[in-house]
Image (cartoon, rainbow over all chains, first blue to last red; front, side, top):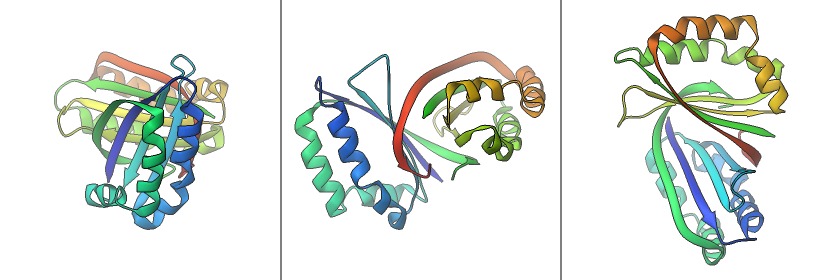
Length: 98
Length: 98
């Protein structure tokens, strides 16, 4: 299983709006091959958003970025972000909640 | 919801054994207040294990470390590890799979 762990930084005051945008399409991702899509924030860094994902395959993850609703959410979020992203690709071995 | 993201480094050749130990108790964690406990590995760093967790509360997460089966797994894993750990506490806002 393909794992993706990433962070993104928003401009001050825009974190919650971007979180809302990220979560707005989450339910639709299961049919695209997503097993887990979790959005978290940090109490110590108020502009940082963490996303933890598990997908059936990297191909399905990458294809999801072309979904209309995903592209729409990204287009709305981009102006609220600094452009600072980190990402890490992992292999999900297993666990609870998948 | 309390989020915990951590990494641990094993000594060479011991990663899969430690992954097995971590996953051995995963199913029992739901009754302890765990919503997500995912173990991942990295293709680019063969001794590194990533753990991503979501718990009803920090207190329930911390208490789980005292569970007999968790303590037993940790005791078996420790000799296979270098002692290099990273951890980050987050607030899980929501998503798919929780």
